[in-house]
Image 1 (cartoon, rainbow, N blue to C red):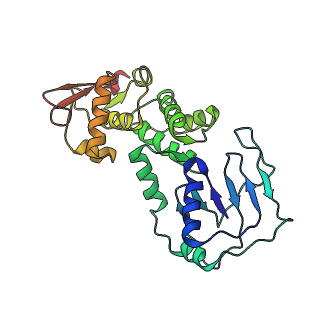
Image 2 (tube, rainbow, N blue to C red; image 1 turned 135 degrees about the vertical axis):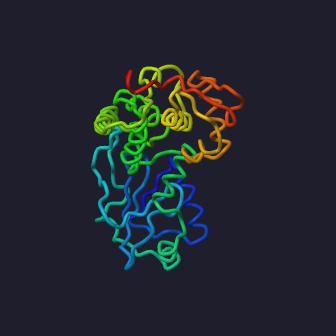
Length: 271
């Protein structure tokens, strides 16, 4: 089954692939609750790749949501061409070869790239991605309330579609049970208040707070980008953004050369 998500460019990707490999055969297809399409075909004799490009996922093992299921948006899945109206077609050889050999990043690589660029988090990856983000925040010493505040920002900015507030709360509460280790922790009130932080800004702030010395200072350098898995320009923009929003104070030079003191962190002993 091919899962086409126009919100992530699936319609454009499909048009490009059909121009190159020929039009897909017509068969059962459904309209998803999120506004995409599910296209059903006979299963190949091999395990296909998991993704054909932006907005096109390949479902081979596991399950799919069928009509007339209710989507969290309030829309229902519905058949455009029901199974009793068309037999399952077989994909032509060019499409089978594409499914067999498509050279794309692995799921983990794609997720990491998406994190680096702050890209959209598609349906099917939202829970796992937000749980990973919550884990990174918790390791920085943020309480469940602070974790939830950060996840709400990510959910609103990047999840397509958004998770419910109840699910975001559940993730934050679950991850918030884990212990914290760093000597400095993020003050959840300071962390959650004021202008919203971008993904790169809060990722950088977490690294700064985890690395603060006994006086609360962090020495700059390319290692900040290495710790956050961000490029040098992205790290620089994040540090400048944190400074403009009053989350860090730069001393002894520039953003990446001198020292920075995160104003949102405090000693663990006083938390």
